[in-house]
Length: 312
Ligand SMILES: C[S@@+](CC[C@H](N)C(=O)[O-])C[C@H]1O[C@@H](n2cnc3c(N)ncnc32)[C@H](O)[C@@H]1O
Image (cartoon, rainbow, N blue to C red; front, side, top):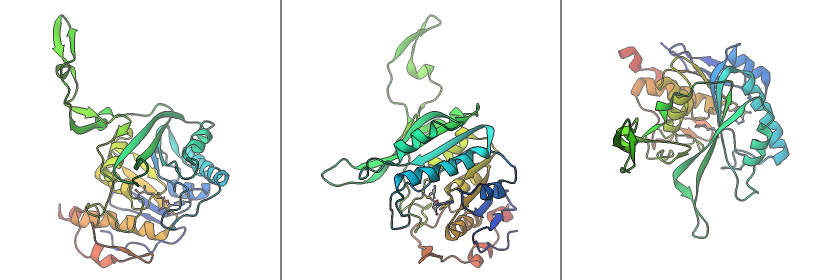
């Protein structure tokens, strides 16, 4: 049984004894930090969601573009080094309409020289957006999908819950005229590379972590993890933040090695995982758990009662 969430500070790595996850308060741009977390293990999948070089809530400064790309190159190299010879790399990134659409195109060009191949370019459509009456509402989230070698792709993870509607495509198969529903592998549509079936996280959702401004939904983490890894595999997310990849790895029975440079987010990740094990809840919904950089949930609340795992 886990007794205590560590007080994260730079350099601390917490190893989860239940499912084999790791959370490190580390810097992805430093090769030695990444090696310290990985301990010579290779990952089958990396899901990276770096700051987009846009100033959000005064959390991140806006670097000159050239410096941002030099910094990106460091973390990309460090990631590729710890990827298995057959593996996948997903990168969430944005294009700032108010600033020459940086850094997405510049990042894509930088990636052309790296020992990975682009495999797809996915757009996730947010339901809610930032809009004015004078411009198209900004609702897109870009996701680059690169591969190293010949990784697995579990296509069943791509099927959505949306029923196929359009009938009436007839084709003759073995002398018999068939309608498209008879020929399809599934009654629901594939997500394809435009995902419009995922609600972005907001305060009414259970999985919400109030105070995490850049939280990715568990549903997108699930789609990526289940398409590009198998049970028991190591997946990494080196910009952990709210711990969506970590929690989904737990739900999908993968091991997640994650880090964040900020100790507060490391603690949130550990707290979210333990809170889930104890209560089955994927977040705290509207309850504020972060104030002035301090986490308001204490270890006793998280660790005092038996976890769901203790109960089964
Ligand atoms: C855009 S957020 C990631 C959001 C995450 N995917 C989620 O669903 O919650 C970026 C995170 O990267 C962290 N970060 C920034 N620079 C870093 C670095 N050099 N090494 C590790 N983490 C870093 C920030 O503290 C922040 O929590």
